[in-house]
Length: 136
Image (cartoon, rainbow, N blue to C red; front, side):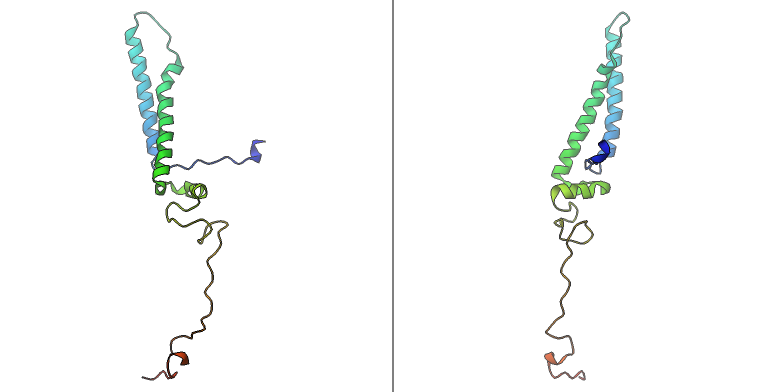
C-alpha cells in the first residue's frame, strides 16, 4: 500500500552533499577515536558494543539535517536545483526569483499573465498622432 502514497521529498540546500560527506568522515573518525580510547583504558580483553561506536556518526548525521533545515529556513535561495519546486510549493513562492506561485510562466498550475489587448489609441504614424502624413 506504500505505492498509494508518494514519498515526500525533503528539500535540501546546495551544501547538503558536502556537509553529509564531511559528517560521515568525522563520524567514522570519532568512532575510531572512541574505540582507541576505550581499548587503551582497559587492561583485559573486552567487547565494545557497535552501537556505542555508532553514536558519533548518528549525532553528526542528525546535526547535518538540522543545519541544512536551518540554512533553508534562513536562506531559501540556497536550495538545490532539483529541490526548488518542492520548496516553492512549501513556501508559496519561488525561492530564487521571488515570484508567487501561480503568477508566472512555467510553473505547473500557474495562471498565465493577461495577454496584451489591442490598443485603441493607434500606433506610430496613425492619424491619431497628427495629420497622418508620414512625410517630414
